[in-house]
Image (cartoon, rainbow, N blue to C red):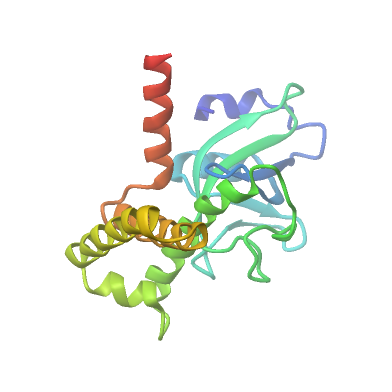
Length: 209
């Protein structure tokens, strides 16, 4: 959505407020429901951080302004009636104040739940890097720098290959999980993501047919 489209929405239907459903742009998980007025939507589109209107406090608020758990907006779309918004965002840390990724809980199962966890893993990694909690393996490895992280990816890749020819299936799965984790951390060190790697695979598929 572009800024000039804000005035075309049906703001009269609900006293100048539109419900805004926030969805994880990477995993597709529904994160929260809030409301936006014109100004909140303008700020969201301009700053690329989700900003809402609090009906209880009668004021604007930006998600993450107190917790640091921002919602980095990728896009905003209106429904067919122009009275509901879909906000696609990349969450930085948990969205809910209770600590769960979604305000609807993290127990909802879908057919894609396993794959979507990779996107959640990236969010957890970002949170560990931001907060640097004591005893965190992610925080420690991050502090050692990208060269060390790249070395770990190489080591895990070798261990995956060895497990494939000398170990059982359980060991192979375990080593593959280690590789995916370290790869996600390495990509993060270059401000890249697993999502971008998946997008590259999709583009190759389109070209190859």
